[in-house]
Length: 294
Image (cartoon, one colour):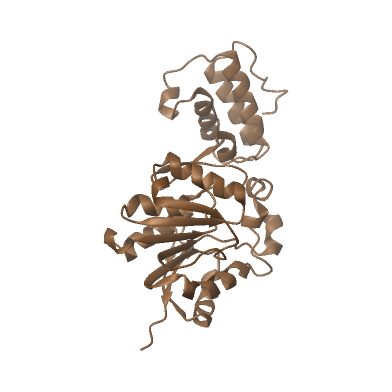
């Protein structure tokens, strides 16, 4: 329904009326699961969770106005995480902003791969995250490997500051530092684990991305160059000087890029240990180490 059919909830409107209007607006805007998203926006406005909505019938006028504004932003395809300022990743609740990519469940595949590859927690003492964004990969790894320390690097100063705030909020700031730098240009020394979720969308495919991504997330974190592999070339070339002797690098990859990674690894004296699929069955995490000659 459009606004001229389903009237905008006025002063005194109850929660159910507001949710009905919100769901209709999001449905007409093409948002997936519009009723649930309307409820999530209402929960955000009321500072509760979805279960907490069950105990509410009425909302105040300031809350109604805030909800209408939030729905209109989401109907314009602004990401939910930008409206709420938060996103969940692994066991963490992270602050988000337009300065970084929004953490996604697919990226948790990299943490799962590390836990399988290094199940003994004492096996990881140091972690480097190149292109750290919100800090999600580094902080999730440190939350699991409690004896480890880490470094997160992002070329965008706003992103590095955001990652540092997330580290403080997670109680992990004493075990990591966040730097603003171009990949590993400021890094010396080696690490047991090197993460990266670099830009990997081929430039010609950017226009076809969902508007939530194309119009609101930073292009520098999406644009992987002509073939989507520009960052991987730079990163694999740098890896031999960053990886400890028995270290592992775990990179997120895009659709079809599992076919290109073995040759890039070989050119830098590396080998592929494993390639892990995400929950959708798409190859998502590539694990590399120093090549071991027969």
